[in-house]
Structures are given as C-alpha cells and as structure tokens.
Length: 131
Image (cartoon, rainbow, N blue to C red; front, side, top):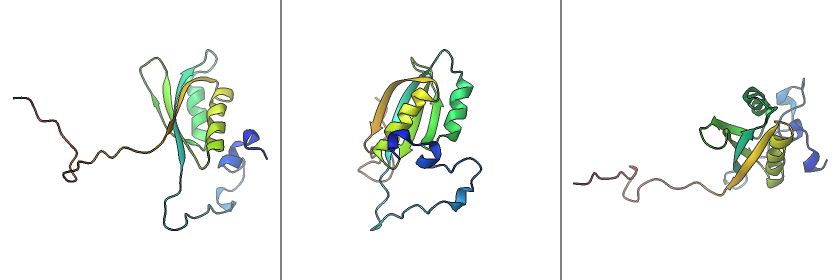
C-alpha cells in the first residue's frame, strides 16, 4: 500500500481488536549501530472545530507521537513525532492536519542532538557570576 494511504496500524499500531504481540518482530539493528529514527517538532494551533481534548485523544493513539506540550505562545502546542522513515514522518504530520483538526504552523526536522557536556569533564558548563 502507498505510504500516503497508510492506516495507523500499518505505521505501527495493530488494527483494533488485534493482539499487539502477534505482529512480526521489529528488525534488530545490525552491526551494533543504533536504529536511525527520523524526528520532527511540530507546532500546531487548534482549529475552531478542534478542542484540545480532541488533539490529546488523537495523539494518544498516534504511533508516531512521542511527546507533546501545551505552550503559551502564538501556537497552542508542540508535538514531537518519531518514525522509521521520512515517508511515515511526513504522513504523520499530514495526519495532524487532516485527522486531528489542527493547523500545522511549522514542522522542524531534528537533525541531531547537541552535546551539552563540558569539554573539561562530565559536569555541565556553568556561568560564573560577575564580580
């Protein structure tokens, strides 16, 4: 089936009423390398017909949704999505628009984490107070 027409269980969740443990096992990472995940931070604004409870309920059942936060800004929430492929990640962003009833304001693809450890040891860098 085309990735643009995937259902939620084809992206990761089993169909309703199916046993979650009966599906095929996920492929193990080869060579000891961690599995590459594609992630995005998506800023959303609630639509006039989409209450916040509808967004929360949608995200609880969305297999790509990892984290979400209500924020005080020009947008209502930020959602962190994670998927095995860019195609599935794009589909999850599009589904936020279509199925959750929200306006996607921006979507930022996460490239890599920043290393916040100090180069002088394990302690994080701290600002020294001015004299």
